[in-house]
Length: 70
Image (cartoon, rainbow, N blue to C red):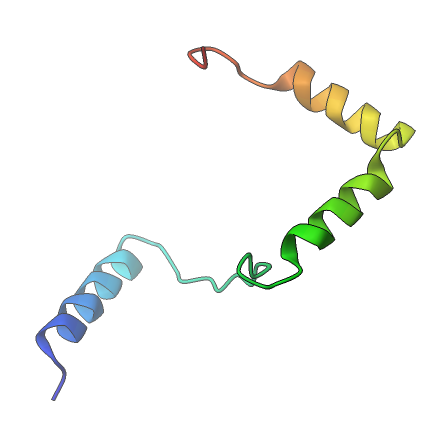
């Protein structure tokens, strides 16, 4: 027999599915790992002054919606 909290979760998931939603699992880097910050810095330095990265950043800046962000 399911616990009350498990039953609430099951009902919630059923209602989401009925609303046309489906679950998706996403794997992301573990920010708690010992070398996470070091790896972030390493990758950032690889992109520093890269022309394609600068183009991407400029494009993102040009299309960003800044309204209400001050």
